[in-house]
Length: 431
Image (cartoon, rainbow, N blue to C red; front, top):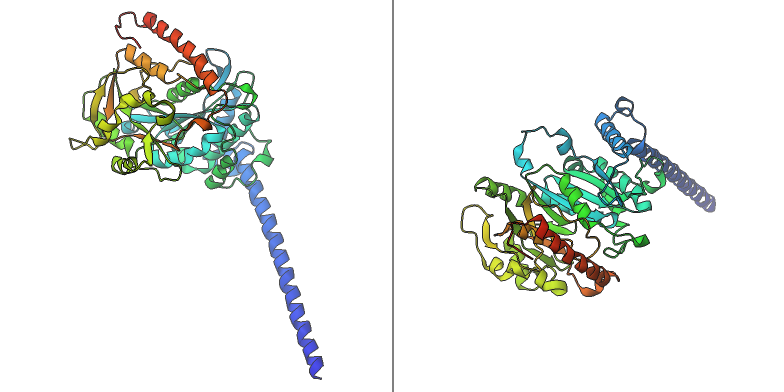
């Protein structure tokens, strides 16, 4: 009798366990189907057909249609005919909704940058720091053209700050064309929010080593800088590489400074550039930066690779200088350009364009700084603003053809300097 009761209890417990297991299987099956349905819905939202009323998101469908239209133009060729440029591939809400004369302060200063798809993940922290209009020119080649088109669209779809402030431009080889990514479903499974898009970009992180792009393709850095510059309507523009970070509150402080002084069209405002160890947190203000600088966690940009290229900034003077007026940002001191200085600067939108003959590594920025000098510009170093590059630049981390490219561009630079004599015949300045 006692054994019979035990058997009955055992059967009840076993039956209960089987029921629980069955319910779990049903629940997991439901979750799987629900997740799949959610993914199909998300994909339909992203890349489905047109018609705002049908899908219930008229503002996102209008973004989709604007992308379709941008792609349908086929882009334009650059002056060399080697590259195809899709200007304003995706416009920010700021650019789309801006009316002349409205909110003029937001048009004082814009940030312009350039990248390949493998460094686009840096955009997340850059937008978080900047909080103002940003123009990004992306170079893509081969399969990355399609990938870049889809991912920047996904960024503008899922990320509110990017949707609000970032304009995207795409550059590819002239023989390549970008297309609407509606047939590439397998690449975008799992894209359901802003974080998931940046996670996908992380998978392409460091795909290339510096400028070593597959297929022996040249990275047109100066063309990209000009495209990004041309994508903003601001009075002043700061052009940086995407893996650099400006000091916090730069936009607000520069606006206050520029509004309180007589502006000169022949003046650019230099931001001292630094490098920081990868493990360190990015400094937000000068006090934080100087503290890291004094213990060797931060050092001048390119200190190991080309210390002469930034030494004219006079880092010791900048580090030891203090703000004199009430504005936290002012001109600390003014310098005359000397070879081979290649400073990063905020300049009026009227400054000469970058020479697009320079590609890959070497002389692409110094050539433009040289032209500014010959054209009569003065270089005013800002008292407390700065840029920081993520990680120390060291010799062993560069691609194999760096020295070969530098040598080729050095020859081009000599020719470029001769051309400036013709372009500015009345200038007594040389570089």
